[in-house]
Length: 506
Image 1 (cartoon, helix red, strand yellow):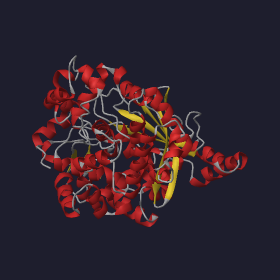
Image 2: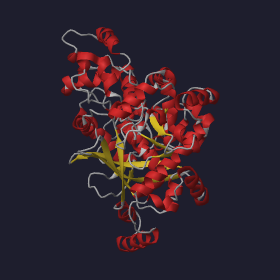
Image 3: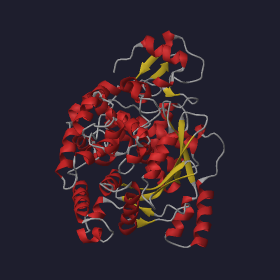
Image 4: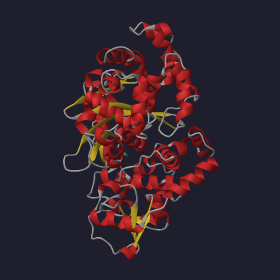
């Protein structure tokens, strides 16, 4: 990736938020690298070197700034093929895919060879996927040491290291600090926390009560974005589509139950996301039962909240349509959950779809006790739904044709034939979706918008889109009108829906 030194230095001088996360500046005199928005004294231009990723800077011996904290920088979204592939691979690495399935399987998921992926990754991010993954583990460890009370041992394993010795050695070598030196204040040790939990668990009893006692302990993180960001609108969008028992929006917060599998183990808990009033960031609270999948949880929150978007680029492409540049395209924390919700919402009201989705989760999900009365159930996995019959689903009030669609979707996801995540090959994935019973063009495009994070998705037959474009607009005319909005047509849909909120589906 080519970075123009003059442009980069101007961004550093002005602390331009548009460039936050797009590059990192390393200073040769201090051997430290920063975000372009860092508040330290601006270094001399001759001492600056620019990198497309934190990993590229660290690979040459620079250590992260303790003030601006490069691990908090927002990600990047792009429609350029190579950059999108590299960022999709980076997102999968953040989600733990490299250590879980390996580079070859990860490349297959993205529709390319591992050789091509390595070449593009090196070209775009300046390092190999393996080196990038190592840096991300270290940056996650740095974040956990700074922002949580986890012991160093817990931090090491939560960050993906196989041994404490390896973690201590690599951390000290890379950052020239011992892990404990990053602690802001003296924190309670693991033994004291374990004793507190033991006493609480004894009074609460076994089973779900144990989980509830554990979940009262929470970890808090910040996730940055590039302004403007219309948090209120995003919250209204998610709130009207919440799966009852699984998700909730209340008191200016988005909350949900989370279940992530790693190394054959299920990690369940809750998260809460709120806006930070004086920062361009969201605050994310995680129950500490999710400590060992923190990276995956944060990666999915970034996707759900569309934190990698570049509002300036999008607004420039949409022109006069972009009356609210802070609008984002909500993603999906759980692609199966979102897709089932989309199928259930076909040709019925948003309220009716919420009711059916809640019944579906209650019938086939797993109960989980949380500190929140409206969060009670984990959404079922595709594997669980493959055990069901059409009658099992239909007795919930879901028509048989949609039950068959859900079963076909679950089977395709459980077998690995279908993968719904950002960065997969969009044309082939859309073709697989259309081949499933009950998945038409509208549903496929909506899934591409949210589960695949495809910025050019456009459900051209959507009633809200057609009404917003004016009386007499047909799907064909809508497609023609949308040509000028490429490659950001998914954002155009959000602006059109903002005009006609009552007709949004599902």
